[in-house]
Amino acid sequence: MKFFVDTADVDEIRALNELGLLDGVTTNPSLILKSGRDIMEVTKEICSIVDGPVSAEVTATDYEGMMSEAAVLAEIADNICIKLPLTLDGLRACKALTSAGHMTNVTLCFSANQALLAAKAGATFISPFIGRLDDMAIDGMEVISEIRKIYDNYGFTTQILAASIRTVNHVKDAALIGADVATVPPSTLKALVKHPLTDKGLEAFLADWAKTGQKIS
Ligand code: G3P
Image (cartoon, rainbow, N blue to C red; front, side, top):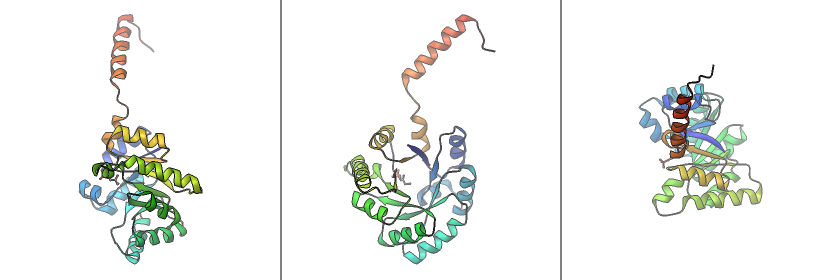
């Protein structure tokens, strides 16, 4: 499973990238707002830190507007992935951009049928939002499972990018189902390493090691 980080915070991105854990980055208008920075400037900086796909989202809602914003975003760097909403205009733009050789990420996906349409439009990634479905008492993970089955039935190569991840169990369950990518907030990504028995075991090893009086040198 590939790990993308869902943030526009360059300090967080740099730190996670140095750990060797990052395969890409996803941003959206809300994350740009949170960063307090200019979209072009911050996206350029992110693209210079991470080699993998960096999703930058269009904000126009009509096909022509999406295409002209996509042209501006695509100029930022070679690893830009154009993020488009799951609307008819978004799907049309997805088809055109994919055919022109761009990476595309179709976002705001909440059903298997929407994901089927994105695959038909040639999307590189489909972003089903797990947490926002769970918030409405609809099982977000079930949608990931349905999409996996449908894509496998027909050999669609669109990658399932599990998004709106809120917990470490979301990551585990998406991995068990076979989602290709998880885009995870920095805090959740770092929480994946945590286990009380790891901390306890390390403490015991270090205490015993101190008693040996040895040094590895
Ligand atoms: O980038 C899309 C996404 O992951 C949104 O997450 O937490 O705002 O539902 P959230």
